[in-house]
Amino acid sequence: MNLSCTLVLSVLMCIGYASARKIPSYVTLCKRDDPKLEQCFINAVEQIRPYFRAGVPDLFIPPMDPLVIPQAGLNSGDNFKASFKNIQIYYADEFKIEHLKVDLNKVYIDLIVSFPRLRIKSQYNIDGRILILTLKGQGPADGNFTNVGAKLTVDGQRFFKKGKEYIGITNKKLDLSLGKPVFYFDNFFRDNPELNEQTNKIINENIVDILDELRPVVDQTVSEFVFGIVTRLFNRYSMDELFPLN
Image 1 (cartoon, one colour):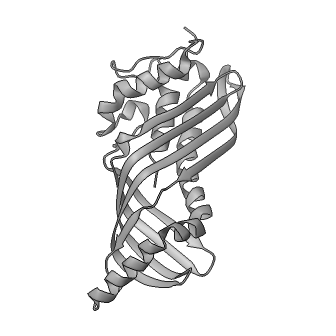
Image 2 (spheres, rainbow, N blue to C red; image 1 turned 30 degrees about the vertical axis):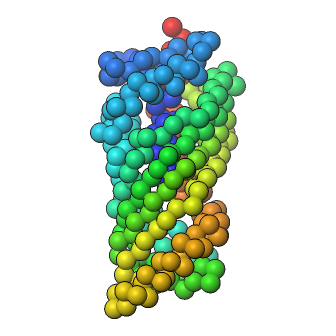
Image 3 (spheres, rainbow, N blue to C red; image 1 turned 60 degrees about the vertical axis):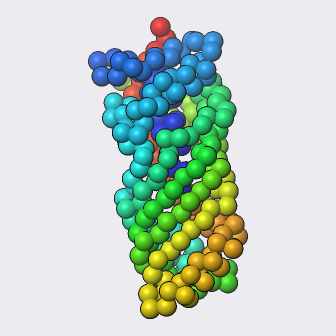
C-alpha cells in the first residue's frame, strides 16, 4: 500500500548514473564523493518530481498517479485468503522524504518517507475469517489512507564482476505505518445493501486490529515488490554507472 516508496529508492540509486545510456537532461547527477550526498539526492528527487506522475522510464520509474500493480495476494494460513487485481494507487507522487542517510563505503541506505494521502482502488476477492468477521465476496474495493509512513533500510557489499564494481544486497528491511485507513468493499452481500453497509462499518471499526493481524503478510508482499526492483537495479548497473566519482 505504500509501494511507491521503492520508486524513491530507485531514484536515489539512478540519479548518479551517466554513461552511454540515456539520462534525462533535467536530472542532477550526484557524485559519489559529494560531502553533501544526501542533500544532493533529495534535491534531485524534488527536481524531477513533476515527471513522477507520468513516469520516468530512463530511471525505471513507472507512472505514479496512478501507480498500477496488476495483482497482489494476502493469505493468512487456511483461514483467510484475499486477492486484489488491477490495483491503482493514487497520489503516490506526493511522497515526502523525511530522512535519508547514505554511506556508499559501507553500502548502507536508511530512508524514511511519508505519504500525506493515498487512495487505493482495486477488484477484490476475499474468502475467510479474520478476528470476529467471516468475509466472502468479490467486486470493487476503495481504500483511503492518511499519514502513511515507511522506513527502508538496505545493507550491502561491493564486489567485482567482469572488471566492474557492483553492489550486492546482504540485508534489507521495510517497516510500514499505515495509520487508520477507511475501506469500502462492494458486493459482500449483493442482495442486501443494508447488510453490506453494516459489514463495511464493522471492518472500519476494527481496521487497526485487522491490519495488525495481516501485517506479516502485508510487510512481506510490499517488501518483495520494493526490494525486487532494487535488486534488479543493482544487478544491472555498476557502481560507476550509478554513482560516478567525478
